[in-house]
Image (tube, rainbow, N blue to C red; front, side, top):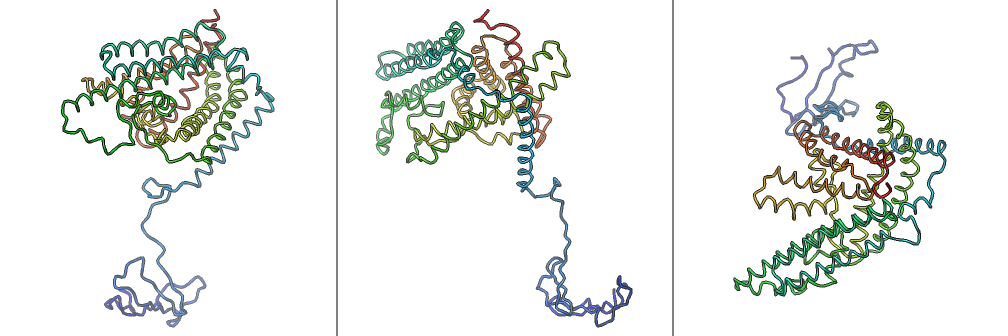
Amino acid sequence: MQPGIKYNQPATEMYRINLSRAPISSGGSQPSETSGSIFTERAENKCSHMNSKVTFCHGQSLSFCHRLQESMLSSASSFKNYRGILNWCVVMLVLSNARLFLENILRNGILVDPIQVVSLFLKDPYSWPAACLVIVSNIFILVALYTERKLAMGSISEKVGLLIYIFNLTIILCFPMVVVLKLPSITPVGGAYALGVYTILFLKLYSYKDVNRWCRERTQAKARSPSSSSASSTMQSHVSYPGNLSLRDIYYFVFAPTLCYELNFPRSESIRMGFLLRRLFEMTYFISNVLSIVFQWMVPIIRSSMKPLQEMDYSRMTERLLRLAVPNHLIWLIFFYWFFHSSMNFVAELLRFGDREFYRDWWNSETITYFWQNWNIPVHKWCLRHFYKPLLRRGAGKLLSQSAVFFASAFFHEYLVSVPLRMFRLWAFMGMMAQLPLAWFVARFLRGNYGNAAVWLSLIIGQPIAVLMYVHDYYSAPPCGEC
């Protein structure tokens, strides 16, 4: 114990610390007893290491400046605000891409041509086969409505109605495919647009069939138990079955940004014109960005990749793949925002459709499964409601049901790519089915940030591989309709 210090004094009393025996200061002089005396203030009742103060005789105070803590960038730290680092990443991304943009302009010049943009959709400006194909789809909508009205009246049995629906839904998928394959005036982009519309219509009418069947079953169950006959009197503004079987109702569902039918959708109170105009501006701006990146950036890289692909030069193929990964991924991100945020919110605002959950935080995905469950909510809800859960109720296992969902998704991916290109190579199908073992591997061996990095890597590298395969096959072998 040091002399001159009273250790038996309570914390609430003042005491004197004598530093006459302290080490010699840097100036080399021994401090005197007067100048080396330190008087503390009256401490609090619980004098902790961090809160106690030592006061100099000249009125200056000294606080303890060290405590047990981790560095901010350590994984054990609770610090989570990396906004400045994120801004730095954005600045570096903008600068690096600006350099690539200038380099591309200096090497290739301006490659964006409005005539080429129009030619993506139309071969002949006076012939619009894809638009006519979309207009014909109204026939299948009316067939579904007519079938439901007959089922509601009891004019046809459930088995006959099911057969009509099977025929109608099968024609929805087969009719546009035959037209696109047999009609050479339809461009690949126009064919993909028409097939996309028919695919959405197929999923919507399938949901329309299921929900109306559930309503009939519920109505029949209520008829057998009349105890709950006045339950619907409190909801006079809500539509009930079969009052929903109208042209207004089915066409609202056809244009609504959802694939799952309901008799009463959540509705917003009014249309916000400012919100609507912002989404319209975003739609115009981002689609122009996509077209500019395709013509100015992707097309030159794809053209320069043909020779390495034909010669099977793996080193140059890898280099072209990495060069293509950046613009391809930018297009995918821009398209995601354009479609799932700008376009779907624009349509939802016009129709006062209240449920705006079109996506969740897929960018935080630590597993492949989480990504597919959250990046496209309308499709995920449809698969869960009309495909996955019915399989479970019929006794199928979870693994089999998940595999069936991926198989159906792989089929539609291949359907939307191979048919417009008029060639069948199954690259999209195999890419989707490869998600099953990849999802198992990531969930089993990778966790946290490593899993998230694996998801991002599969998105950045996987898509340009499929693009190069389809482009190589498209230009190396003539399409089916042009042989």
